[in-house]
Length: 362
Image 1 (cartoon, helix red, strand yellow):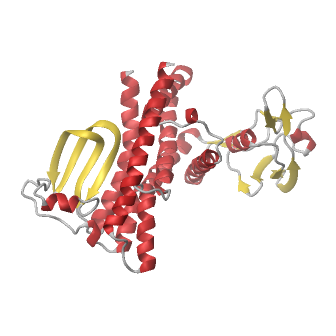
Image 2: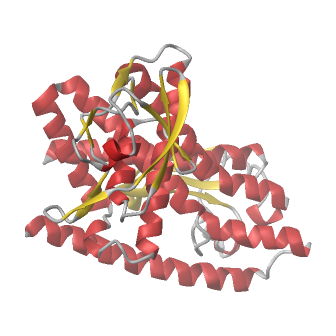
């Protein structure tokens, strides 16, 4: 249990810190004063102030914050005599609302962007140590849809429909999500590019459609250039996963038990590490943690870019409206929208956390 908590703090903390660090660095670069840079939520366990910015470690390891002067009423707090102590340091920079609109856009966008940078760096490390699973056709089942389409063992799948394929797990994912739609397959055989149409076959026993390919994939040990190439493909893969998951959520194909929060993530981290260590040893368990970091970092980046009030994407919408209008939306109106969004998000977070806990005690 203790190890699970420690692993969760390391994994989730790294993802959150990278996000807030993006806001912090670009905000400071644009001359915006940072009031507080916090890791975690709730009461402070430890803090210090430097350059007019308070750096704090909070009790609950569920998030973080980079708070700018002038954002969400922080300037009003200072005017009311609640200024965060600065140990004699002079106030550095301008308020968030006083910065140019493109400086604010860059500062807000930097949080999600740094999540993608973190994901890419970790993905490059993964590619260096784990290589890549090329989308090579394995065994073609007799009488299957793959056999009818003319696919053979050793064929390299390049595209399914318009979607480029770089890993065999992408083929498995598309197959698992298929509901009987025909697939346009682009593949290579002996250096020649070929095309075919595959119509998945339905299994009454498993209640899903199958392509008819098993034991696929071919290991590629990446060279120094390929680690960057397949690192990029790794991030792209998780972007696709996140997009498809959101699409399924909107379409009602995902239940409440398929959605998880910090408690569920902690359980996933602990179980994944234990299983990987038991079956393959500590080095593989560490690589599994790195893969989870890529997944979470991409998820956090994409989720924060959604045009939802209180999230970075919601704030960006108001700033883009300001660019079009030539003047900002009245702060009180924008504040009301973000506050409403924050309330909804907090209620959703409580529901998800409750659902995670109930899954644990079942």
